[in-house]
Image (cartoon, rainbow, N blue to C red):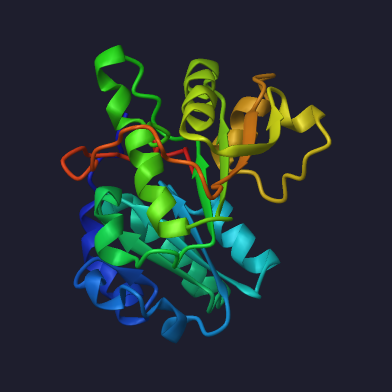
Length: 239
């Protein structure tokens, strides 16, 4: 389910755009130059940041890092940008755009850490290539993160999780952490998304994986996901 269009948001967008917190045009100009925007900081990326509970929380906890959130819908992207602006966070920006354009926005090896939180499961078999953990997207992430880049994945959807773990292993990622019930594991979970809080409070276990791109991963065939639209969260609560 998608948010209903809110006309007032379009009028409010210039505030966060002019403040340099929300970008939705000419993002290509920053490719290979993000260190000019965030000198000396590791670049952390969240695809499908929703209303921004996770990314703004992480930016507050880790001022030594820079966080970029991607959200395809401007009616949603406004919220994390507004949160960051109000909190005075200088280490975060939001990109309003399609994540299929990642290669146009970031140079190889420019990203250090990638977060995929509660991505759309695209449950039908014919939709598998749309899943952000499909091997085609892993090939794209491999270019942008390089050897040693970290991927963190959380979801309440067990079928998507099992699919994703299989893709990770087939692709050759090194799995360093895996849990089918994150909140009752010993793995760190510094910030919960609002969606995570809602479903865990109902007793739904949260699946978690930390994986690393190794030197030899990515030997299976992949194709560019350029023509596949990888929407972010399936509803407005997914952050």
